[in-house]
Length: 249
Image (cartoon, rainbow, N blue to C red; front, top):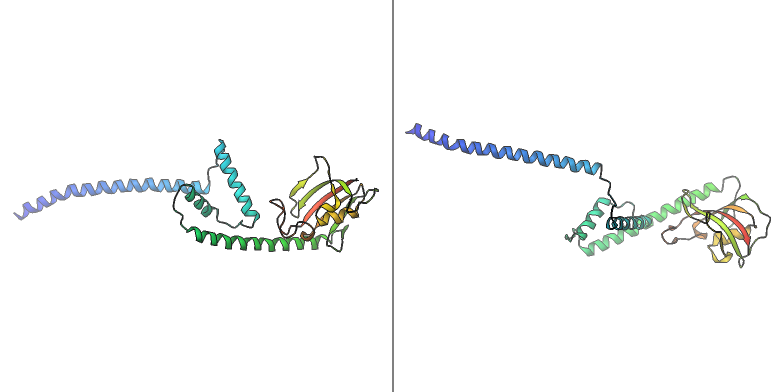
């Protein structure tokens, strides 16, 4: 009788063992698939696929992203975590609940941006001061009482303007890193009143003669100051101009 019971127990356990083995094999296959998927995702993160801007909506979306990023960078927000920022954007755009309450977000962003702008301002002031200190030692560079620095490239023999005169000039404006932010070269020369521009220009033009071409170096306090100008000129920026005084009108 006991033998019969053992036999029955064995016969019952065989299908159960077979079923367990089948389930295990299924789980192994699933794990393999998930592993391959994870490998593919990791590879994509390492080498992200270049986005194709092949329709208007994608181009607009991409363009908007560049504008937002440029604005943030100009305010000192270049240390932001792009992945986290993208996740926040995605959550809002897809209607997913934000992981941080809105009021807390407002406070966090305000504190961060204020600190970022102050940090950038200090860096810009330090870089500008170092550039001007080194530049005034360059052969041919003259420094006035206001801090204006200039170097004569070529000399003319015409008259000098006063603040109420209008002048016609060609110019190219650069930052201390050499990046050009504005230029009239290749366009018509520009005409304006000497006293109607930034202080560094007003001072430099009255020292020049018709036909002169100078390099002028403007500390921020005789350029666009602590606020800068729009998106083109950041706060505390030292500016470099190549100026050709064509005519005193």
